[in-house]
Image 1 (cartoon, rainbow, N blue to C red):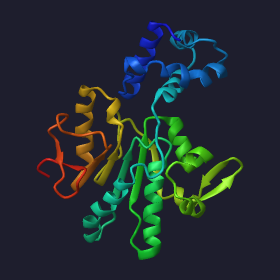
Image 2: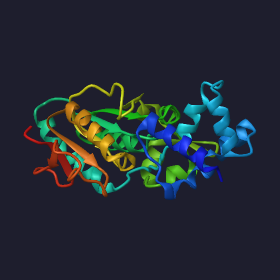
Image 3: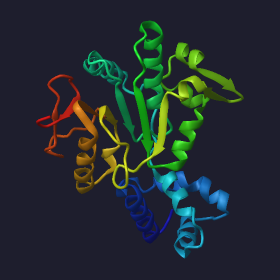
Length: 268
């Protein structure tokens, strides 16, 4: 286990780079997620890794540590009801004869945007309705690189993905599965930090930001909500995680009267 001072340094690094916090009771997780990096760099302890980082001679070690510490929990069709809600929510925009735009914020390794891409590609095949523009971002370079590759392990491919869709949209490649180029090209991936720096320009009809704000402080959340509100177009909706809410967090959003479980910008 790392010393208290090293845990403090790692916690501060993650929050400074991403806005995410690690609660004290979850500090044990550092040992687990950083073990591969320790082995790669031939360090025996986290204290040695932190000392190496603080020496400042390794330009990439901080990024590698942050990538490892980020919670990248995700799966295909996570909370399946959400995807049904999204289809219903975009019908109004489609009725106006314009292409719908969706932003998946905190997309991790790509399962959420690819789930949307499969859903809308199949709908296009059946009805001819255009596939929405899907933009997916994450603060982690490593996660975005994996998402662009569309490569998933057997464990990842089995989490939430129906066999029918697995066979239709993925090809076996050794022990992994590769998403078809046809599917991957439906998603535009880019690195973006919700807390600071440029985010994809709006307007968007849907912003999915599920289980991302859970790890931010109240002050940081207060800074993020205006950024999301600023890229939502008229009638646009924010979709958060099942255990998340805007109530008590911001006055910019309110529960949507049109779509249960979604949020809309107040007065827009």
